[in-house]
Image (tube, rainbow, N blue to C red; front, side, top):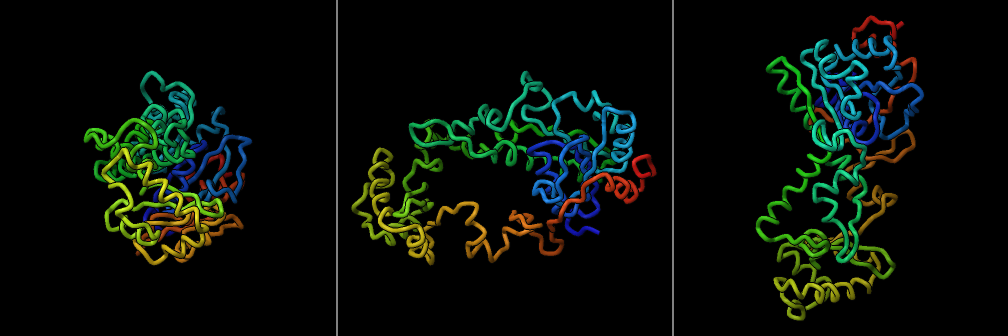
Length: 366
């Protein structure tokens, strides 16, 4: 029996890519009983980081038997997750109307890039396209350079999977009072726009300019950026507040009066050059040691292959080894009902186990 704050929650996940499996992993880590219905022929790897914590098997949803099996599971579920283009699930006979008819309290979570409505709703796209329309992509990159895709963290995962998780859990909480389910339209354009809330405020206050690399939090400020070290690695500096800035200069052995005032935006380049010259004199490890016991907000920029070995990260167990694969531990943490990362159970034999445990007497269980 699973433990965690979501123990007892039943989730049907229709196989997809990107944000839907990540959302399902988050729910499974927290104890939800997640069952993935995969497409026939889709790879089902129990060791896949994005598959952990759930049971998975294939159904051919183009066949009446496959659809019937899926609806029987949906009838027992609390939450459904799907990531197809608008209209696809309806064409399969598994759209919201059909599923809510079988299970009126079902929360039907729909994950798309453009959303269920709007001129682009039927168009293809990827993370980079969704964040390009919300102002997020334009804000990221070096001064004078092109926009830089921030991996697929902003659209797929931050604006997608996490808002989908938030949405379906909100709707499930409401359904416990009303007894009624509903559709959750989670669009990456909406989620990534929401993530830009702070910068909307700063823009309205005339504290944000459109140019990349010219603002307080986009690498423009010399006290909130990265610097190369003597060994061609980097340190990150986040000395926003005055006490942290003073601590930074003290450990760099730079006299504050030797630099222009921080308020002189047109002199930021001068300040940056002074800091860059100083950071270039020691290695990353040496600077990490210099700043280790300070509040100057300086840290080494670690690669993914280095992160798990950092003393703080290791002490918290932020990364774990599951089935020989290094991967992030469940987050956030709960004091009384902790989550747990588990391997997936995949394959044809899983179907019978799922149907039996969910109390469904059906063809797929035979």
